[in-house]
Amino acid sequence: MERYPFAVRDQAYCVWGHDLSQRNGAFLRSIDPKFFQYLAELHLPQLESENTQRAAVALRAGYHHSLETLFSLLGALAQAPICAFAWIPKCSNRELRDLVDDISSARPVLTQVGRQPLTWVTLANIVHRHVWTDENGATAKRFGQLWGRLATEFLDEYHIDEYNSIKHGFRISAGGFAVRVGSEHSYGVPPPESEMQSLGGTPHGMGFFKAESFPELGDACRHHLWIRDAHLNWRAEGMVQAIQLISISINNVLGALRILNGTQPSTVRFERPEDPSAYEAPWQWPVGLKRGSFAFVIDPAEIKCVTRASLVSELEGRSSGAA
Image (tube, rainbow, N blue to C red; front, side, top):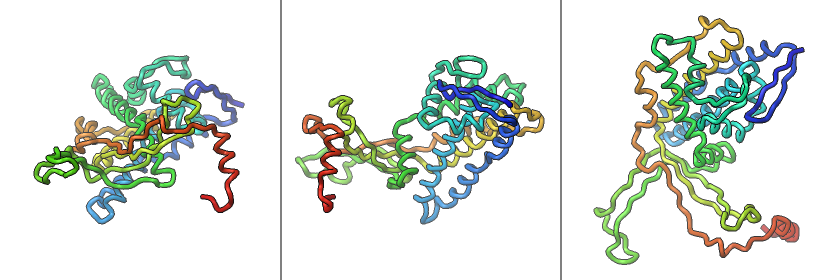
């Protein structure tokens, strides 16, 4: 019987089994690193068709999903490389984001060799230590910087809400937004069209609802909320390029995990973009305003804060015809 202790962020676990290494190897071989690239190639031609917004949403969903996959594998590499198949099911979305934040901030992480600070460049050096050894870690540094930039988006509150809105109930509106401003000559009368100034926009993006509490009312009233209209602008072409980079990254992290699991390095294929500028390409597309939020102002002083129990009593006391 084998045992393997590991941490998911700061929570300790111990997995038991008779064939941990074999099962981990089978798990790593079962992951298709080209899946997300396939999605990108499938939807890219549709951006020029009547399905352009559907394709853009599919690409954005694939981007978020691929980010989650990449950082799950990097988290397993950091904390349980010999039992990634056990680490990933035990890591919740909240714990994964907290771990990604730890690494982005170089806070100590509980690893198989004690608690130590990790960075994305540190992990990229571990992943790529068997390849391109004649260039002083230049490729690893580029991947590390890429993962750091992707981590910033993975942790962004708007990005999290956008992904949840896609996954849960598909509560989104497809398409980008633009803002145009001008000075009124008379109160309530719009200025002439020729005087309006555009602050930029993009054909691709997403609108979604974002639940907000009233922090001025304190923790006792956190169950009272209002809904903000939130919007993000992005370019679907940039999503294609980002997914391609993430797919390459997933391939390389899987390769490193397989080597740590006993596979000969010479049999593992690692990939990288031929042009170093490709690491920055997804963010070079012009989008104008990247985010926006529109809502009527609600004065917290107008909110009558009652307890959850009072709300339950109110609901239970209603007649069957109430809605």
